[in-house]
Image (tube, rainbow, N blue to C red):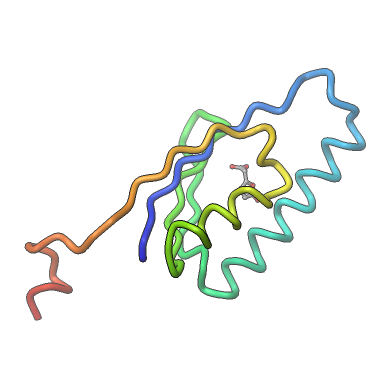
Length: 95
Ligand SMILES: O=C(O)CC1=CCC(=O)O1
């Protein structure tokens, strides 16, 4: 199943800088692993915001929830999930 996910990041300004660096570094490593595994299909920065829009290809809502819940920056993100299905006018639906 495909899901569009928007993540708006808000790390507290007073967070210890070393902890901030550790979180961002581990988040990046996790994101790269998930992209290599094929679960995190797209990862785009939203222009002008500390936000991303992503597409995940996972077995279902439980797997997506587990992935998002375990992201290092999860405590500092507001996450909006939109399930996707093929549009009937998409090229992929009209070979
Ligand atoms: O910077 C972000 O948008 C949050 C994030 C998701 C994956 C990553 O490496 O950073």
